[in-house]
Length: 468
Image 1: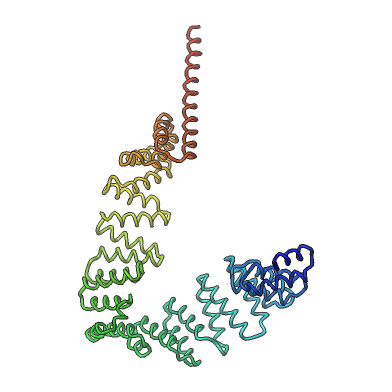
Image 2: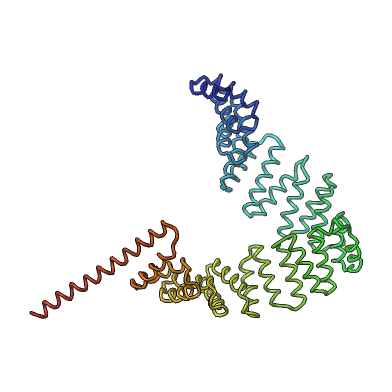
């Protein structure tokens, strides 16, 4: 009853009473965003901006994407608290993907900040926005400003180290985590971070000093050439470790070091079952094949690795090298053609679809790709040839039949287009599609009849002139 009564009071512009009734309902349903919006709206009407801000802030606690809440909070603070105004405006722009505008807003917010906590949190937000833009140098600058303040959280040092790690600036990453320890964060997370950086930078002896992770210790031992000792420890690990994907990477690393490449590949397969399509799977396979002298599979897996890393140009080069060694792998040819197409190299891609068709003359997918390519360059005759081959393979391929009919139209072969559209009519199931094809067929037949009549009339006129 309170809700209906509140709505009635609001409709009658009895805002104080409406507010009180909505408040009763809100106490019963504290997570109802709709009620918060109404209470916020009425608070503004009743000139209670602090109450309104409280409700809109609660909305954002439950829904960070709520545009109305950001807009209302901006309106509330525009003339009273510039720091909060720019923070909310920055959050709104960030939500909308307007990162440059958001960055400018947070820079302005810093100029209005009155507390160290506000400055730290705003610069941290700026750092993350720069990271989203791929501008790691500016993100690093923001983190270094932050490190000048006290009462920081260890996450700030770990995030900075992570950026340095991405840029392979290992010395800087180590320095950031060392500073964390100096600031009192001698924690497992910081020490494991240091171990990871040392291992990545090629210093497993130093990494093993910091880690408590048994699997990481074993990895360090393998890197240090302590193969036998590492394997004995690996085999004696409790069963709980053997369900970890990392366990299989270590097994693979051991067998790789022991030159037992078949066993290494088996372990990589087990890893792939637990972490499917991981870049590490392809990287490990590539390293094994490299060491084993299998150039084809090495290039193939390096290509797949670079696809997962979105380095398509490098992937293309690897696949091209693989094709030079073995050019009858249809799956590889399709992958290479797709990458070339994505790169805008459609002519080059067509060469590989042609190779597929030579290897597998009935491959409908490759024939469709080639037909589409020929249509794109206006070669309707060749397009028709490829589409006809598809129909020979599958006479009920409706999409191919429709494309063939259109190709005949473009090639000014109306009678053949009519013939193919009639076949489409026999196969189509959807009433709307049937009507579209029937309309097209009727127009073509009508046009053909009109042409015949025109020709007949000209003949009659010419006959009259001849008689004269």
